[in-house]
Length: 273
Ligand SMILES: C[S@@+](CC[C@H](N)C(=O)[O-])C[C@H]1O[C@@H](n2cnc3c(N)ncnc32)[C@H](O)[C@@H]1O
Image 1 (cartoon, rainbow, N blue to C red):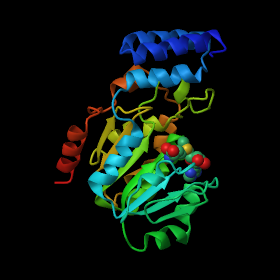
Image 2 (image 1 turned 180 degrees about the vertical axis):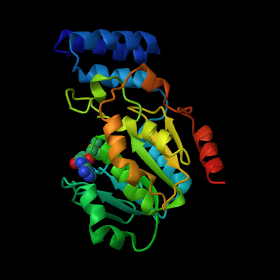
Image 3 (image 1 turned 90 degrees about the vertical axis):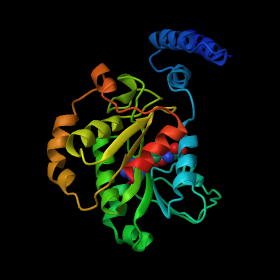
């Protein structure tokens, strides 16, 4: 039973959505959030109503089956829900400073209980890769854009041109849930800035965002392991982008594609030619 007025409104939103009324559901979620700006069920239903179609777990599974990556590297493993989507013969590597709950992985999987910067600075990263490039990566670790940018620099140096790097949380719900400081249970941090940063400073990359639940998935291809642009401009980029906040102009600049398998896979194939 909903225990607050906000939760009652969020429950109504959920019913409206289940009945196919997405705009009614969105309006009810916004009313719930006026009553309680930290109403988790309202945030979740709002994301569901705005981002219909396959969610990010379905997309990760699709990338695994479409690309059959030799090596998958995940930053931010938590309970292993996404790491477990890798399938043999993919070799899966997961990096997360918090201990990962024991879980059965279908693919041969190694986890490293350390922060991503420490992992890449240690000999363990190159030893684990054993000379192979990272073919598919998923960045879902510390939710600050400068960390996501550092993660990308490390990954690109260990990738091949046709490797694919995915970033979670690049289509946030609103300003409140995409702030650098966490104020809400539903929170993406400012990882979304990775997309405008790459668009501005690395126009040679192909970058697009799938509007998938809960907060979008950015896809980056046409990598250049020899590029030093982001290393050279790192401090200037952090200085410029740190103060920015999510607003209509940021939302309008997101290079969205349809949440549709054929559209995305066609675009990937094109970027690999
Ligand atoms: C949102 S969870 C990952 C969820 C998982 N990918 C999934 O979809 O189920 C984020 C994880 O990032 C980890 N994390 C935080 N800082 C990190 C860092 N610097 N390097 C790697 N992982 C980090 C946290 O411990 C947490 O488990």
